[in-house]
Length: 176
Image 1: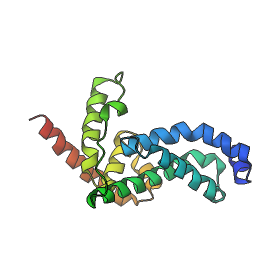
Image 2: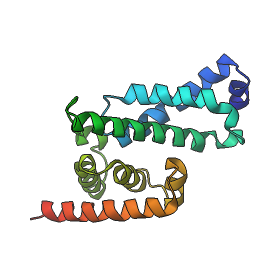
Image 3: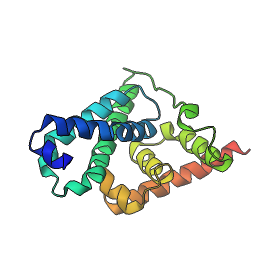
């Protein structure tokens, strides 16, 4: 009902969709970005894209998955932009603050896994970073990652294999 209303241009429906999904968008973007420097921009840009292209959504019940893909792709563009700015020395790399991403009440094995993953993500190319986070943190299947990122399943598998190998090497360095 809200999606149909928003598609018809009803501002109340758009506002209700925003309120319903802003926490979800913020959480996903935060986990993908690793810090909150660009978080508000990613969330706002994601909603702007969603509301501008809502008429393309054929199944209103698929809004959550469709919007999740928009947030993911907006975060990917932000990560790529950050890397480019750092490469050209226009900006400095912002470190991932692992403590803000990991709940102290999480089981010890989960904390260790997340510390390993987030300790490596800034060193990974964008594709590997996003695939690794969507798989290990968001617990998405490979098919879901392909759908959410717009990359082929083969590309997702290659990126995950590469990221996993780097994670394993990083993990072994940490135990020495």
